[in-house]
Length: 556
Image (tube, rainbow, N blue to C red):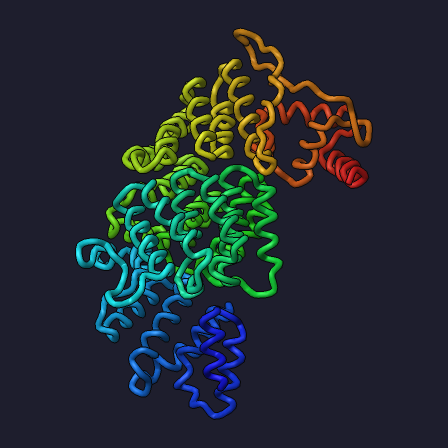
């Protein structure tokens, strides 16, 4: 009776199936005869540990169970291991289940095969019988089968076909599963895969829409919820909206259960990226501790290349390149096996370019620029990065064409990379001696920064005020232009802009770091600090810091 009740609950993907199978065993059912079904019920309920435990009990005694149960247990274990980021082991299990059943691997295995670089095997699964059909003869074509087929072909398209076709197929697969049971058995949700492809093509609105819908409909069940939320945080980060990104990360970290290694890798990379974009060295160092643990727990696969790129950039900033060097080598080998698809390789090249910029390595920056140019055909996203890359080389060599740099920066903004565009314009402003170019580039940088931070409301604020007039041909070093100061507020001694500078001074940041954070020149920061000392009547740095801490404490 309990077995029958469990089977009925399992068909409806009810968590009651877990309890009914336990009761069946307590009532005398041999544990091994229901272990495969119990594994599936635990997976549907979101208990990955329980699912893997029951599946492994079957896989450890395959000579004592039916072949159907062995295949079921193998499929459950493959899905769990994929969700934990162990794609190579997951692929082995899918191959094993195919050998046991005497059939080809299921279409659900294709994202795993592609994620580990097994391109020929993935082609064989998608192209079997010459028509790419994922349906099995004699069985009704269910919604899950249709979603599996669309997902498989979409992932293959992302590597060797059209990015648009890939995104379309994956989005349709996610739509099919909104009203179907069975998504919990997949190694990844088509919504997450669609979002990854969309992010790699710069289609951030599409990515966010697919993920929002997946969260509303509960696609993939409880185990997929954290992944979908973290991916939404990643999208916000790439667009420059660090506030919403931090909120998404905090909401996931506040959960009761620890994150699976795959999700923890993304969460750690997101935390590192937020700290780096906020130019907060202390937070970056703290978040790097978490990142190191995530790095050693998660092997490289195709779907973590962009977070890996962020960790590569942060490692260069902290001079910790040895932590990511083995992963970079694995990533290169993986991309070689896949034919270095432009869609997936371009963001990693971009991250390595940013790492070269941070270390002032002109030769490495030039090499990454050439690689980006080779991948420019992958998408308009890759094209924008390839267009901007030579200007980063020019910045390192103190060669700045203000008009071209601004166009490249706005091109990055057009594909959603507002932070990257603002940083390019800001750094170029610091490397040129043309005062008019400085004014134009800093104004562009502030406008793009503001565009990113206001994305949460869906509006773009007007550009920041233009700097004041500058001399046509300065013959000697002159104070940098200072923005018009609003009426003093708070303590009545410092302007709002000076309070912003004060907060960063108290954090121990250098004038250059403050300038990068606020998109003003280091000379302007120096001028603000000098004026604060004058207004507060202090002489030494320690006195200034004490006074600023007092003012900021009263203000808070």
